[in-house]
View 1: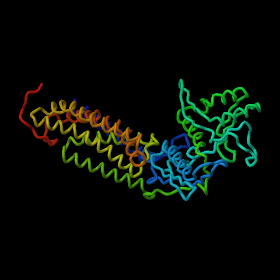
View 2: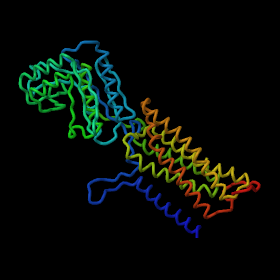
View 3: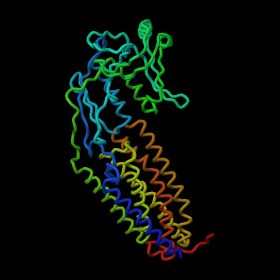
View 4: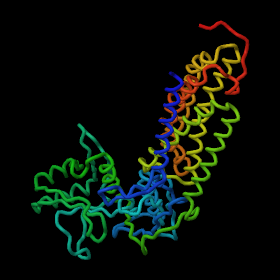
Amino acid sequence: MKKKRATRNFIILGILLLFCFIFSFVSFRIPTTVDNFVGFYNGIYGGIDVSGGVTATYVVEHYDDFEGDTSVAVDKAMDRVEGMLRREYNEYFVEKVGEDKIRVTIPKLTDSTTITSNYLVNYITFATEEIKDAEAYKPTFTGANITSASYFSANGTFGTLIKFDDEGKEALKAMAEKSPSTLYIYQDKDYTSVLLRISVDKDSLTQIADSNQLFISDKSLFPGRDEAEIFADKVASGMIGVDMELDGEVSMIPPALGENAGLSIGLILLACLLASFAFLVIKYRELAFATIMSLLTFVAMSLIIMPIFTAIQVSLAGVVGIIAIYLITFIAHIIYLEKARKDFAKGKKLLASFKSSYVKSVLANVDMYVVILLTAIASLFVAIGAIKTVAIIVAILTIPSMLSSMLIHRGMVKWYLDINPTKYKRINFEKGEASDEE
C-alpha cells in the first residue's frame, strides 16, 4: 500500500513540475484579454548585460544665484542621482562627461522603461502664483533656502517634512501679505513643471513661515512610503544649486552580452543543473531520483518567484547569484544524505538511519542558512552593483531553498524508502555492524 501511494505521489509531483516548466518557457495570449503570458523564465527582469539599457546625457545648469565650485556641484548631483537609482536598480552607471554633463544608464526592465525626473536633480521654487513668464519672474524662495527635506510617517500616514532657513521664512511672510490662495512648488527652471500645488491662505502661510517648516501629508499624494520618499528627495535635490537638462535624446543600448544573452544564460544554468544530477546518480544511484525531484521543485519555485521581484535583475552577477543559491541548496540536500550514510555505516537500519539523521541535518542546515541569510541581508545595506545583485538573489531565494532542502527533500526520501525500505545497495550505501537502536 505504501509503495503504491509513494509511486502515485511521485507521478503527481512529476506532472505538476512538468506543467510548471512548460509555463516557464511557453508564451500565449491570455483568453478574453489583450495581455500575453510570456512565461516565468521570460518574465525575469534582466540587467544591462542581458536586456540592454536606456541611456541619456544631461547638462548640469546652475541657478542664477549659484555660488560655489562647479565641479563640487556636479559631484553632488551625481551622488543624488545614484541615490535615487539605487532604490530601483541594482546595476546602473552614472558618469561625468566633460565639466558640466552627466551620463545616466539604467537597465531596460520593461518596454516602457525610461529615465524620469524622479532620478534627476531639480530646480525647486516656491511661489504663490502661477508663473507664466519665466524670463521676467524673479524667485524669492528657491532650493537654496531649504535646509532639509525628509520622509516621515505618523499613525499610518506618510508625508514629507521640509525645513527652511530665515531667508525662506521672510520670503514666505512676504508672500502671505499678498493674501494667496495657492502655494506652488515648481521643479524646473522654466516653471512649467509643478511638483505640488496646495491651497493656503494668509494665516496658514504665516504659520508655516513662523515654524520654519512645512508638513505635507496627503494619502492621494503619498499612498505609500516610496511616494513620500521620492517627493522628499526631489525637494532635497533643490538644495544642491543646480538643475539637469536633457542633452539630446534618451536612447536605447543593446544587451552587452548580445541579443541571445538570455538563451545563453539559460543553457549555462541548465548545464550546471544536469551536472549536479549526474553527480547524484553516480553517488546515490536510485536515491538520486528523490533528491533530483526535490531540487527540481526548488527550481520551479524559483522560476515562479523571480519574476515577481523587480529587484532581481539578472546579469552576469545575477547568474553568479543563481548558481550560488543553487549550490547552497544542493549542499543542504547532500548534508542529509551523507549523515544518513554515516549512521547506516555505524550499523543502524536503513529507515532508522534516515530518521535519526534528519534532525541532525536540519540543525546543520539551519546554521548554514542563518549565516548565509544574514550575510546577504547585511550586503544589501552596504553593497552596490554586482555584489548587491548576488545578495538580493540569495536573500530572496533562501526561503524556497530552505523549504526544498529541509522539508520537501525529506518527503521525497520518505516516498522512495516506502518503495525501497531495505535494499541499501540500490542507493550505494555500505552497511556497518549492527548496533542497539531505539
